[in-house]
Image 1: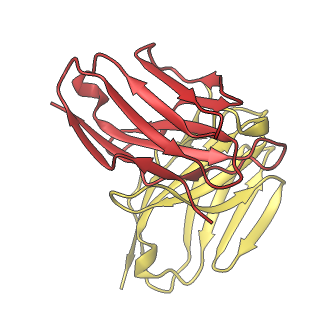
Image 2: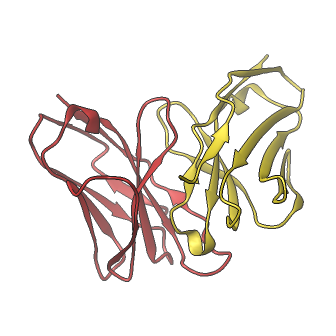
Image 3: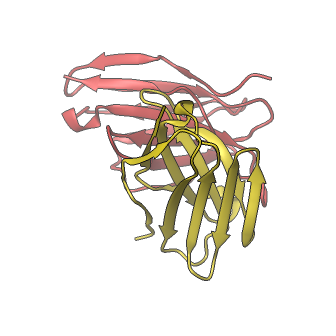
Length: 114
Length: 111
């Protein structure tokens, strides 16, 4: 049973560039959530995708956008990168339904903006 | 602003002792509660989920939930050095919308 996978593992970009991060959910899951985790902080919710639609969004600017594909995999796009975007980006998958909302995390993508 | 509060620690306990980790949350409508363990440089790993008031035990771990007090805790019995990590409390609304994480409590188990 494949768990949540993310790519790439590490990424180095410069200010102003754009980046795309990818996530494949755990087998049987249909919902993908993205989180940003800065050093020493808890994960901060960016947004959640279900049925190829953004279902809910945290307090992140429009520079952060996403997509979910018919196979439930998802992408996170960040435009006009800032130094403060350097963080661990985590993807979590779950199965939508009452009492089945447990989220399982992928290994994360470490983004460094120079 | 919905919040989840944890003592940042570090919490230091000797090997074999009970480690007690606490968490409070602000949203009375919260439906689901989770504890994750995160080793340095790694992603969070689910330890326990709890949905109803009371205790839930799984091996050396016991989660306790008190919705009236908006309080959730995690007890780790017979603590081992391998339990040394950051423990994240997470609180979700119905259907898992917008799960909010605390900043985590760092636990050190001394051999």
